[in-house]
Image (cartoon, rainbow, N blue to C red):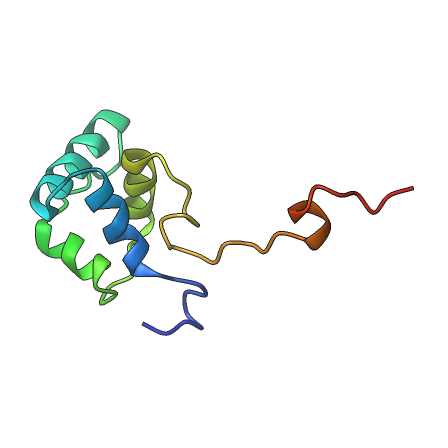
Length: 101
């Protein structure tokens, strides 16, 4: 998938979040499906280990429902899960200094 289609997409971050949670791809699929049922996704997400694998390998960009389920399950933003570019921190904010009067 091209970086021009999904700027900043980094599928390795998704795999890292799953591994940090101690989940197999099969476990993640089951949890995402259950989460979508409790959160009232319409239609309910039917996650599979194969789709998790395809997302993590960068073969398929996760659709809106998958992205929402991932952010809920891992408690992380879309940027931290690699779905889009993390905005740069301005130099003055990075060192805690203000440029105002």
